[in-house]
Image (cartoon, rainbow, N blue to C red; front, side, top):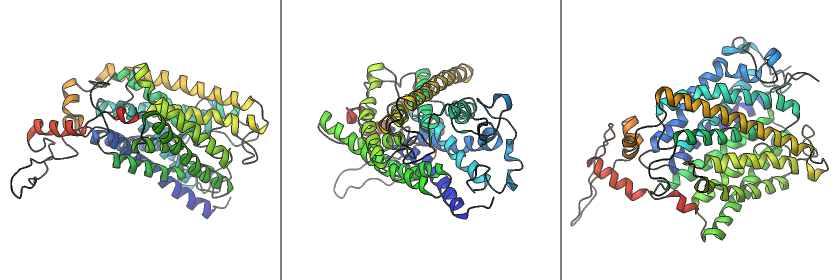
Length: 463
C-alpha cells in the first residue's frame, strides 16, 4: 500500500502534540505544587518521558500491539522487540497508509503521559529513585496489558484481538487505557505512601496559578493530537474527534466554574483549569462516537461531577495531592459510561448505538465491564508494585526531608531564590546570585518563611 503523505503528516504532527502534553502536565502539576517541591513534581513528568520512551522501543510496543499466540487475548509477544525490521516496513497493516514507525511513535507518547499522570497523587513525598523504578515496572505490568486488551486486533475478519476489543466496548483514545488506568493507579499509590505531613490541616495551596493555566492550555492544545490523531488519518473521523474535543472541554470548564460559583460564591482560575482537564478526560473515549451536542452533554456532566469529586478525598481520608482521582479517574469513568448513552453510528459506523440512539443497554453494559476490569486490575497490580518497591528501597522520603522540601533534599536545587529585602530611603531588593546547591539566600529560615508566605491550602480554593 502506498504511503498517504497527508495522513502521515497529520500523524507526525499529532505525535509531537501528544508528546508536548507531558511538559504541559509538568506545568499543570508544578503550578499546583508547593514552591519547595515544584522542581521534583516537574521532574517526575520529564523523567517519565525518558524512561517510558525507552521501554516502549525495547519491548513495550511489541507486548501491546503484536500477537501473543495463545495468550493474544491478554498480552502480545516479543516479535517486534527493539523494533527490529520495522525500519523497512513502509506502511501500517491496518490500511491507514502511514509508516509503521509513525504509529509506534504515536503510541509511545500515550504510554509516557499515562504513567506521568499518576505522579500528581504523590506530590511532595515520593523518593525520586523509587519513582524512576516504578515507571518501567508499572508500564510493563499494567499499561501494556490494558492497552493490548482494549486496542489490539490482528485486523482480520473474525481474527484475534484483545478481550475488551472483542467484547465490543469502545475507547477511541484512552478513557480506560489512559485515564481510568492512571487514576485508579494514583489512588493505589497514594494509599501506599500515605498522607503528606500536616494534610489536610496545614496550608498546601498551589504556589503558581499562572503555571496551572499555562499547563492546562498546553494540555488542551496537545489533546487535539491525542484525540483526533487516534483516527490515524486526516479524514472525517479526525474532524469529528477534533470538534468534540473543543466543545466538550468548553462545556466542562463552564460547568465547573458554575458549580464553584453556586457552592462557594466565586469561580476560580484553578477551577477553570481543572474543568478544562476534566472535559478533555471525559471526551477522550467518546470523541469519535458522539455528535457535537452529545459531546457538550458529556462535558457538562463531567465538569459538574468532577467539581464535586475532588472533595471526596476529605470524606474518605486519602491524600491525592493534585486530584488525579477526582479528575482523571472520575472523569474517565463518566466519559466511558456515557458512550453507552449517547454514542451513535450516525457519526461513526465503526462504533455502536447507545441508549438514546435506540441501541438499548447492551453497549452500556459492555462499557461498564471494561471500566470495572480496568479498575480492578490496575488497582491491585499497582498496589502490589508500590508495596514491593516500598519494602525493597522505601517509596517515601523522610519526614525531615518532606518538611524541608523535596527539591532541596532530593535534587539540591530550589525553583526560586528569595533575596533579603532592605528597607529605608531608596530601598531595593538585594540582587543575589542563585546557588545551585538549593540552599537559597538567607538560609533555610528565610526560604521557609518565603515558602510559608506562598503556601496556602489549594483545597480552600476548591472548597
